[in-house]
Amino acid sequence: MEQHLAQYRIFFEVAKAGSISKAAKLLYISQPAISKSILRLEENLEIALFTRTSKGVSLTPEGQIFYEYLQNAFSAIEAGEIHLAKIKQFNIGKITIGTSNTLCKYILLPYLNKFMKENPHTMVSIFTQSSDKTSLLLSENKIDIGLVAKPAKTQSMSYINIMEIHDIFVATPAYLSSLKHIFDKGFNPLRDGNIMLLDKNNATRRFIDNCIEGSKLHLNQSIETGNMELLIEFAKTGIGIACVIKEFIQKELEEGTLVEIEMPPDLYIPKREIVFLYDEKNFNPSLIKFISMLKK
Image (cartoon, rainbow, N blue to C red):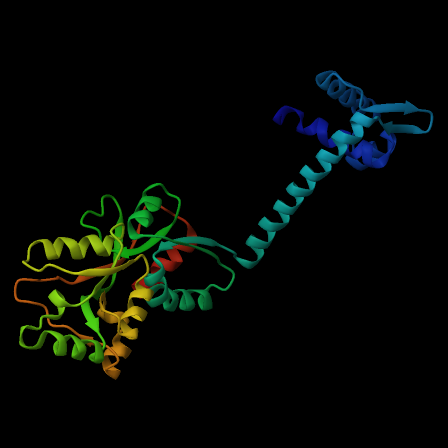
């Protein structure tokens, strides 16, 4: 197709002008050269595109169909050129970010807000999915940077530490009071309560399961969801005990809406690190700006 692009342009201008002589003036090409180009194109396509008359040329039905296709194609090319010109004029860039819904709300948005104030013409695409999926998209070069809980192995990726998080169990004071009333002195909230967790496909859930495996604790799970926001809301309604991230419910803890449940001696849940993961070999200018902002 590439070798015919010049012929396509000549055909398009002749069809639009309705005259070989007019097209020749517009294209600064001799009339014989245009006629020769049209003839070669018709030979290649094995179909007549023009009907020659004493007044000029007119499109055959097949030529009209071909003209309409080329009109759309050249319009798309022109739009692309205009878009590139705007990118150059306004220094427009693009960055793709992957993260989970929870990390997007509680961590990414403030950074994104700051970045957009400094780079208002940057186009940002956000892919929300599990941390595992984000890491996979990053390894496949389908996103520029990912906000995730730091994986055990970062492979060839670089990362920037953002914050530490702590997974805790919480419930309303009223729910705990009800449990205590039912079980009296033998009351153990993590053993006797309705436990609400993220689903087993979630990286956080697998992390919690691994921690529990090493203890003697047996959880009576009643609710499983893929959304930590729902876990927090479920806990606030007083229907059970939810495993959530402490840093994301500071307001509720301070107000006493939710209370943290003390871990049993044999259950230890270590802190986790939240990081921005990226490939240093990615030289996207917008990514470089974003990383520079993160390191300030």
